[in-house]
Length: 260
Image (cartoon, rainbow, N blue to C red; front, top):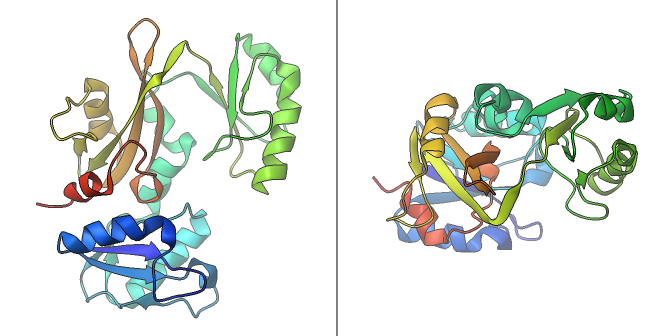
């Protein structure tokens, strides 16, 4: 197993500063690490340093990539004779809400999907919900007006701010029904080859996470769980593990997921 990190913009042979702690932990555990310049993807000049050994499995650990850029990353890896742990299809299976939502509709808030060109205010009025959480297929708006609204008329502002601060809207608009969550109860779990892990070695894995591990078709993904005010656990997010932050985790514990 080889772990591939984004390179530093000014030093292409060194990992980006945001990932140096993970690199050190992986190396201390005996894993090989490499770096790749994401800026050069698609230019034909992108290289992996050092080059992975042939037939090895590469796990990417870095920034979110568009489907086309992830495909380019896979091509660069495969050009070395190595392979990726997570195929493009598996990447999108957990990266796009539209792909994982149908598999766990009973475990997560009700969600509707729209095009940016739809009459979103009218659509939200038809739903008749008390509150709405707005995001695109991948991300929500964490700055400016934020992503939570209680009036359909506010949707135009949220979408405009998403386009302004994000540069583009990926896929389309997802509208999630707001439930009465207790924010401080949110926890992130990782699933590797069907086995779920918690941030603490002796922490009990919620049944809802085990259920996701059975239903989601990916070798490596994250599951974010939160408690509703009535005590019910709910899934608020699933993401590709390669591009998920280790929020609530130590780099050492994250490394342990891969030690057999």
